[in-house]
Image: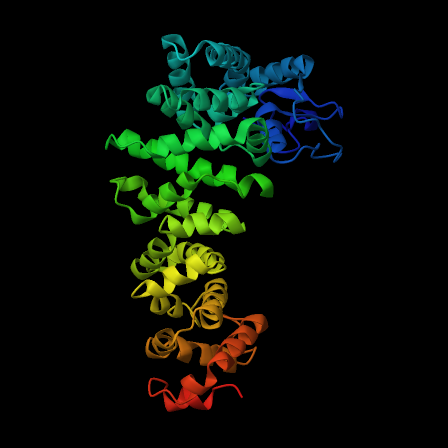
Length: 427
């Protein structure tokens, strides 16, 4: 059969495919519903006109165009799944809207069997694939209802909260949605996530739920305003450290939870008050242990996050004291100076500079030379821009030279420094 050209007005401007469920924005441009909802979750503007679109805008169904597309598909593509999908989409949306409405009612009445059944049904729809997740996200108020239900049930109904968290995680909520939840009651949301992280049933389902809570906590803290982020409770850092240590039997969920914990520590310690809380929770020792254990190219991002957190923790006396008190703290950081990662090398040099400037006892100065950290600093300080492009930049070279000059008398003549490196020592 000869291929028939698809009319241009049947094609979605985003997907460039035949529209399954055409809807029209206030800008008068028509798109496929699932494509424009996905777009609006990330950018509050019309893709073609670039005009702003309100966050709570619900596109208008274009029934005339929908009928035309169905008729055309019946004539030219009788076996095409587009027609079946278009016929089922309105019913699916109505069913999902009813489920979300049941959740909104349960928020005021407390956990109920009917609401738990609705959550499980939403979870099943999300598990079907991207199409199901997009339909849930397209229901007005679905994300807000799920978050509110999770917060209300985290401490009193763990199963109920776990089901809500499962759906929330699958939807990959955009930053603006999380920011709205934080503005409503960020303290309650963080408290609910901490409560989930404290679960200790030992089951695989419990471990998966806690891993999802860790990821959501990292996302929530990342979108917080500085005033809120600077006042995170101490328990956030206690739970992040526990995830880093991996001593809670999370099994296959460990990798996801570890990265989320690193994101929490690296982001939250940008604020001074949080540095002391994290240091007192044992974050420095946990981060150093992670640097010692982690290897491989795919884990480089972990080390970069760990060094970022250590750099910020060394901005307070408690953090510096914890690092030098760790038997392998200086060595673990020094190993990443002049390494394969420019970001990691830059952070490692900054950590060593903080230690050399503010915590340099005689023993620490000797340890920096004995563990090879001083030698690595010499390599960075003496590298030419064209030679060191892969693992340091000019700012890092400058910091390395500053650090070496702080204790030049002790390090330049140290027997631990190879003669070749002594020749590279900055004047």
